Structure formats: structure tokens, C-alpha cells
Length: 327
Image (tube, rainbow, N blue to C red; front, side):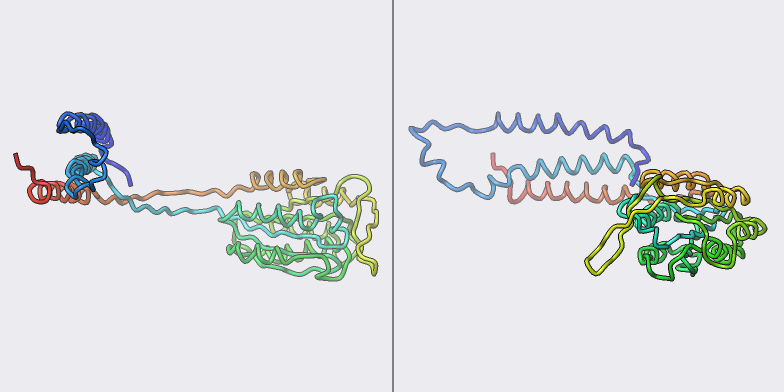
């Protein structure tokens, strides 16, 4: 609710001296009676008239406040907006191979990637986003959709072991290209996240990148993993054991993939770095929105005028009936 004449609201400050004046007058009008002791007098119950003696003043104060609010012309507004978006479709290709459970990112690489990607999805409510996962093979976990709640649920279901192990980067990338190539969006983007080198599949990553380029698809590549030795949990009959592995992958290919398509390569060595990467991609791929605002205002002063009338009538009735004073 807004006010067309908000300057009238300053008149509410007049209620402060009115209240002080009333309290002063009440104090002056109190009758006195000299008695030997008042110990027994305080035990007498107060009459209803005594309990209600301040009600007329309260009603008059509320009536004045309602009149002032009515003068300020309160207005309720119904607004809506129409927006036209440039349209960005984003396909995310996520590596879920065995090395992605390494714990250099917390709690591990897959879970860290899922958490940060979820934040990215929630920050882009106007875009169609989909998900492809790959290891030794590749499949579409979620096609392009604007229903991000469904996408996030499917994202949360991703884990190591869904498909045969390995790292088929080219196959995962080709699958993502196939899912987005027919999009009518003005901007088409693939975000490829992996921690390994291509060792499976019949499609080379560079070939997939060349195909993406022909469809005007831009690819951002993210290499995940800290430098040096990392621990990978391995289930055994005696429980989880940790195997040490050198953290390395084919950075050159990831850089070339990004370069061919006009994208950019990033290296994520920890959770905070991965989050900053997604934030940078978010800034690089901002959707252009044109917004037109419409407002329809409805006058609400009648309601406050009605309240003022009711408060005044109630005061008059009380002063001339139940709380009538006899000189």
C-alpha cells in the first residue's frame, strides 16, 4: 500500500500533545476525599464505568488517526511486468568417473560440483538448463528445461557408479552438443566439468568441439582437482581404504576445446575456486531482460473514512449512555 499524499501523515504527530493533554486533565479532575485510612478502600472492586472511562478518548484518538490516514489517500496497487529475454540455453556435462570421488574438494569432487552447480542453476531462473553425465559412457540425466526444481532433483541423484567407469570426455561433450544443437536460443552454452583425460569412447574431444563450433555453441571447460597427490576412497571387505593418486589431467585439450568454440578454460583446485568459476561464467553469460512495469492503483481512503465514522459514533453512544456524566 502507498499514499498519494504522504505529507498528511505528519499530522499523526499531533496525537502526542493530545494524549499528554488528556492525561493532564484526568489528573486535575481527580476528586479527593479525606479519610482516616485507605487500607480498606483499595480492596473495593472497580466499577465497570471506572474501567471503561478511557474508552471514549481512545475511540476519538483512533477516529482522528483514521481521518488523517484517509486524507493521505492510501492506494493499493496491482502491478505486473512483461519481460523479453534474449534466451540462453545451457547444457552441463559432468564427469562422474571414479577419480571424481577424490576428497581434495569437500566432501568430494562430485558432491562439490553438484552443490556449486545447484547454486548456479538457482541464480539463472530465466534460462533453459540441462544435464549430461559421463564416465566410460554418457547419457542425458535431464534434457533442457526451465523447470529447475526437477533439474536440481535429478542433479542430486547423480553419483559415482551410475555407469561404467572411465573418462569419455568426447562422448559426453558430443551428447551435450546433440541435446542443444537444435535450440532456437540466441546463445547456446555447454559447461564441461572433468578431472581426467579422455580414455574411452569413439569420439575425440577436439572433434566434438569442432562440431559444437559449427552449431554456434560456446564451451566453458572446468578442470577439477588440486595439484599433487590426492586420496581416493576405495571400498574393501575391511571397510573404506584410501588410495593415493597423482592429480593430473589433460589441461591442453580442455584449453583447446574452449578456444575452438570461443569459450574459456578454468582450473578449480578447491571449493571456493570452483564457486568463483561458476560466478564468472554467470557474469559472462548474463541474460538480457527488457521489463515494462504496469501499475493499477485502487483508492483505499473510504475504508479509513468508515473506520473514523464508526469510532466517532461509538464514542458518542458511550458518552450518552453507559458513560454518561451527571453534573
